[in-house]
Figure 1 (cartoon, rainbow, N blue to C red):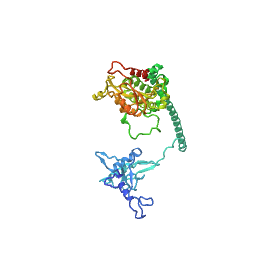
Figure 2: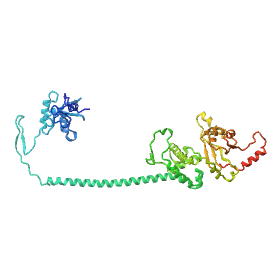
Figure 3: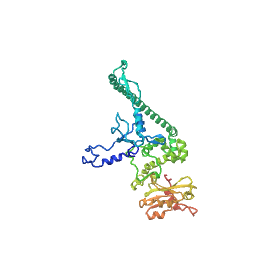
Figure 4: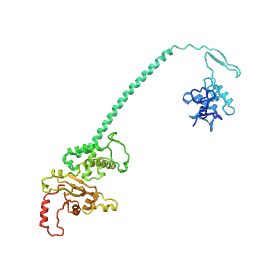
Length: 470
């Protein structure tokens, strides 16, 4: 709201002052708002006295303005002002501090006289008021001689010592404040240290009790020793900066976290080693999320987020170890038991992973495996002669056949020509391999025959006198 005069029937406001400032001055020839113009404004606006500094004068101003809010006296707002046209000297002064002119309502003169009469008080400056005979008579006064004052400190000495005392008080408060700040800082650091120790004790309570020996590590994680567990943890842990929140949480434009702090959000409820153990136990033992949440004393939702975050980081690390080497590397690293098979590139087979039964009937149908008699997911794995994994296909449902999976994932297109692969009887891909100049060896069977032929027995003894390496 604009600043307006609170007097009744007075339209002076800041709007008219701003409009006057934009007009040309008839004397100076410039705008009134410029500094060169020396003309006085047509009126000025003055604030009401505040309640804290001068509440008595504020009440008198309100009484003289004469506005009412129902049955109560009107209270001025933050935009209420009184213009200079209502003051005797054009502004509130010591002698005339009240607005007494042109108040805009009938009978304001009598109210002004009454308030001015109540405002006047006799001042004792060497004279004492004796009596008041009537309103018309003047005050009769006689000289007054006050008693001599008691001896006290001089005002000048008190005034000179006051700043010194104030500075001393401020200095003492600063010293006490700095001491308290140091004490609070020490207590805060000690509290954080104790919280970290308590958190470490809670995290070690389960991890250290589980991973006591190398046999325990092998049972819960599949690693041979605790040293391997620690080394892999040190490699994967730096990649786990944020927990995975799902596909919907990712956006096209993401923040650059390279220049930010290592980890965001609240502090971990589990240590890094405990989170790594949680992921390995779920992969190794097939434990459910609720069981793991109870073991590590966390929520089931947090357990799932930890598992996905560490699984994604582990995939980045272990995916670098799965690659198809060149022929020279295969020949140089081929064990003795495979030396008689010169063109052998890899051994392939499909592995199936048990999953929970889906609620959707169609998903139950396509994930059902007649071989495992359970709902599964199927993956094609290729293994080099030296037992190194060279290829892992995408995940398919358990109902798909080995031949369809091999052709759909495009594994045969990755193999060099004139190479040889070994497979199980379920891989009926002889024609597809022949079209790509790839040799396929499948162990012979006696399907429809009472006994294997002598040539098939000799071939089987030549290639199958050793077990597969995976």
